[in-house]
Image (cartoon, rainbow, N blue to C red; front, side, top):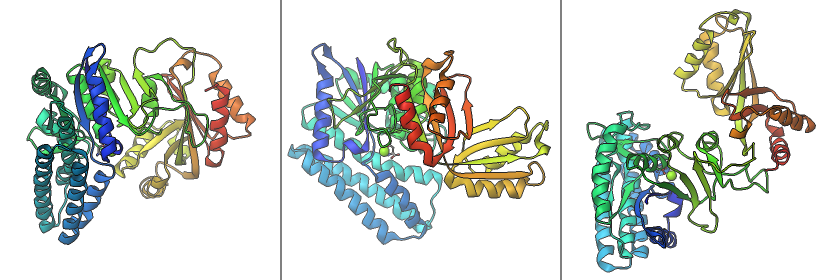
Length: 466
Ligand code: ASP
Ligand code: MG
């Protein structure tokens, strides 16, 4: 079997954790059923990407001293990790030299940027790549330290080519597939475990791009679909996807198995955040995706697959999304006027406001939207300036609302689910403000006051025996 193993920053940040990772790889490499080919993808150490992003400020201020301190600290964190992880002296020395050289390049680039006090999306992607670039050799040398053959690569080296949309680049799958296959096949033939930096790739001109925050998951699934892997494991420090937020429902359960479509409804909001586009490549190629906790191997985690075992579980999970606000725009002018919705959404889009939920009744006299609470002020101002008195007459807002989403592909075509949901909500004496169900019938979402969120989630969790 060909298995992709992606390790998140929270499970590679100390020597004991890396030791576990090596043991995991050893156990997957040689099983009683035979040998497997393993390909590893690694993230940067926890928080490193955030810290590099905050460097941008120092660059603009041209603050070279603080930049130097930052780089020295980053180097010493990684060197310390090597010293406490890689016991073979020769390997340890080699690994240290690699990290020192990468650090030197990092420092030179930062000095250059600080001299001109400028950071662009392109240069930001370039400096962001150093978090992952420092970790890949450390993990690869840890494998060598345990007599596993291994080598390390950047996403660019291994052949992931993207468009030039720096910060949120998309892979050009055909070229990527050709390149990755020729590189990885050769490595696997020699029994080498490639350790590849997650998150980073390169555009057609060879300039470094990143796939968006949490992009290492995406790297793993891109590679998996290119080489038609058998399985992808996302190892982090959470047990899996859950039936509800465990902070609200104390007996929330781990979902053993769910479909890609269901997972797509859940992964942005639960304990395990997965890059929103990361499911696509494996869903299309029908490769199971497993979420596992590297710090709790006794938990079998969640498998996301297209081939679910038959189950009579109609509802899988109750998702609660807090910190949202409702914005309702209305006015007689909107009725029967083609293009009204387009103008409203365009205005919001131009101001980079993301809309989470939309509804409009057939009378067309109002449109309700749910936004992040933090975006509300900006949304109201932009609509007032551009459209009030012209396209719309009134703007109403409701702060502090929650979206509750009931997820489960089993509800498709089944009668009475909505009845059950809303009876349960009304028994809690809670008012429903807005309702949306997509025609895929995979989820039913509704909005309530945030203060009612916890009791509604608990009631639904109980109602559906989750
Ligand atoms: N290091 C990147 C981030 O924090 C990518 C990843 O961790 O997946 O967003
Ligand atoms: Mg991360």
